[in-house]
Every structure is written in structure tokens, then in C-alpha cells.
Amino acid sequence: MTAKYQGFPGMDDILPGEIEKWQWIEEKARVFFDASGFKEIRTPLLEPTELFVRSIGQASDIVHKEMFSLKDRGDRDMTLRPEMTASVTRSVIENGLLTQAKFLKLYYMGPMFRAERPQAGRKRQFHQMGVEIINKSNIGGFQVDFEVIFQLCSFLRYVGLTNFHLRLNDLGNVSDQQQLVFKLKRYFFQEKSKLCSDCHYRLDKNVLRIFDCKNKNCQPVIDKVPWDQMTPLSDKFKTLGDCIKSSSVMDRPIPFEIDRRLVRGLDYYNGIVFEITAEGLGAQNAVAGGGRYDRLYQDLGGNATPCTGFSIGMERLLIALEAQDPKAFEALKGRKVYFAPLEDNPGILEFCREEAIRLREAGIRIETGHGIFSLSQHLKKANQQGGRFVVIVGPDEWSQRSVLVKDLEKREQTEVPLERILSHLKKAMRLC
Image (tube, rainbow, N blue to C red; front, top):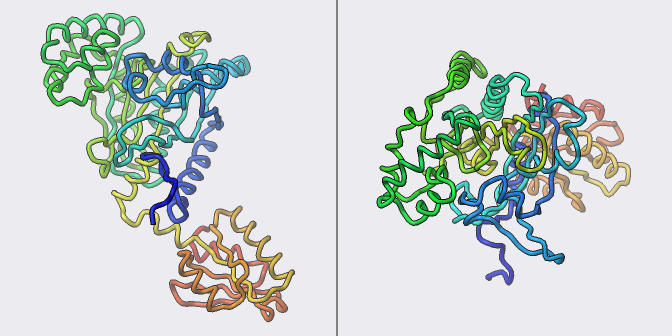
């Protein structure tokens, strides 16, 4: 039977059985970024359209083709955010956060919206997590760029992604870019007859956006851009490369290459830009990317503020993790506990509720059989829910201040005192 109402293509439901992976990656992100000194920020889904036109660029594919925009009841132009950096910038300026500190380390996660053709890892409502180091005094210079890249690679390895590759490019500083744009325009104008109509538009509006083109007929022209003549790699960029080359994450080097074609799809970048690719994502194999942006705060009404940041596509990260290891999330099933009360006893039911909360606070996933008091029904439901452990609380166990913990995988059952349930489960799950 076809449902009367269906979701929009590319805006997917995340259902039980799948949502646990999302919750796991979100919890890992909060632990990692909190421990690294970043503070979470949340901004509204709707922002003024002009914010993104000004920051991302009129000629970018995002603004030119992909934004979900509308008029609100006050006849104001509003847009569902297609990315977060502009929203974070607006929030920091509006709330005066830089009046309280010389630099900010912020992280975020949440849904973004772009009217793209849905494909693997690319949705119209997609999700990102990312960080921004907002560096009012430009403390550390390129060392901040290195910190951001190192944090990104460290996080990916922390969540288990090992088979990834880092690509880097140097777009030059603000003054260098003016010369670069002039030289690129001259080059592409000479090759204009070989470019598609979209690239003709980009040549007029913002020549850097030609590098976003997917038209195969334009690729030979793009590939032949003489980057080293137009903007040689800076000494700072070379030093950054040396730092990456000499560093390691979890005792493994960071694989990287210099890709002079890499410009990223947003107008506010200057200097270092980077992208992380991984296997299992098809042609669109980028799982994360970012770079330095020194003009954005000034462009949006604030003071000149050097910044560096990155974002990670959460859908793409999950796909990449499972492509690398099809059993990557099997461990989550082993950390699920099902509570099975065998009697409609207020004391037993209240204990199950309170103990479930305590275990959930400790990072253990919980299922509870509400309104079921038959052990066979409980075990059937526990198997359906994919739980490994069942905490059985019957009248006999309750009178002895204990429970039975059944390991469905090993087919073992252990009597455990009430006060030792958490420690017993953590040991069985190898969490301690």
C-alpha cells in the first residue's frame, strides 16, 4: 500500500536501527571536541538569503542553483542554511562573542539543505559536523591551520576511519588572490570556446567557480591551468606541509598530496584549503573539507578576523566507515541492554526505569519491554530489538536484591547484585 503522504526525495527519515549509528557518531564528536577545547554552537535553520549570497558567492553552484529560498510573512528573503560557516560568523558578530576573547574554538553539528540530485552520500537534507577556530589576533598563523587539519585527521581516526587521504592547495593571501583572479580570467578567456555555458557565466561572475564544473568537456582546459606560474606555493604553505609530513595520528602518518586544482566551492576561502577523501563513496568521494578564510568577518560587517575551519559530511562518514569495515557498527549491538520485568510490581517497574536511566547515562543503549511480563515474550522482543544482554527482574530476584543478566550471544546467565549491574555489564562489554 502506498502511503498517502511521502517525504521529499533526498530528505530521508532516519529510523530506529539506523539512528543508533548517528547517535554514536554524535556522542563521539561531543566527547572529542569538548576534550579538545571546542565549545558547541547552534544556529537557526533559516537565515537571511543575503548572508549566503554575500559569503558563499553569487556565482557559486550553491547560490546559483542549489539553495532552498523563500519569502517569509514579512516578505523577507530567507534560506534554509546550505552550510554553517556563514551562520556561525553571523552569530559571533551579532552576539559580540569576540569582545569576550581573543580567539574562539567552536564546533557544530546539524542538518543543511541543498537542492542537489540525490545520490550516495549526497542528500537535499544532509548533515554536517565541523569546527571553526576564530582567531582575532592571528595567534600562531599557519600553526592554527595545522591544528585544524590535525584535529580533523585525529577525529577521523578516533571514530575508526583509517583509509583516508588528505589533499591540500594554496590559494594565496588576499592580495595574491586578486592577481590570481586576473591571470585565471585571462587564461580561461583564451580557452572560452572550449568551455560550457555554465563556465561562461562563472568566467564573468567568479572565475574560481570554473573549478567546480563537472562537465567532462571542460576538464582538459581546467587540468592545464599553469598554477605554479600564476601563484607559486608560499613559504608558509611549504612549512605547513613539512609539519604534516613529520606528524602522525595514532602512530600513523597522515597521507597527503598537493592538488593545485583544489579550490573548494565557497568564495570566502583564501590561503590553505584542504579536502579529505575516502573509499566507498563513488565519484563524489570527499568526506570532509575546509580551509582558511580571512575576509568573511569583514565582509559580513565585523572586523578583519583570521579563521580556519572544516566540516564533515555525516552521511558520507557513516558510508565510508562501513565501506572500510562492513561490521563497523556491530559493536553497537553488543552494547544494548534489554530490561525484562516479570511482574507488574511498582517497585520492580520503578527500579527498571531508574536503572535504565543510570545505564544510559553510562553510554549503554537501553530497551525496555513495557506491558510484557512473560519471559519468553521478553526474550523474543530482545532478539527482535538486536539486544545482546537481558536484565531479568522477577519476584524471586527482587526479594533477594539481585537480577539475572542473560548474555544472548554466549547463552550464559549470571545472578548479579543490584549495586553491581553497571560494573558487570561494562566488564562483559569490555568498556572498562
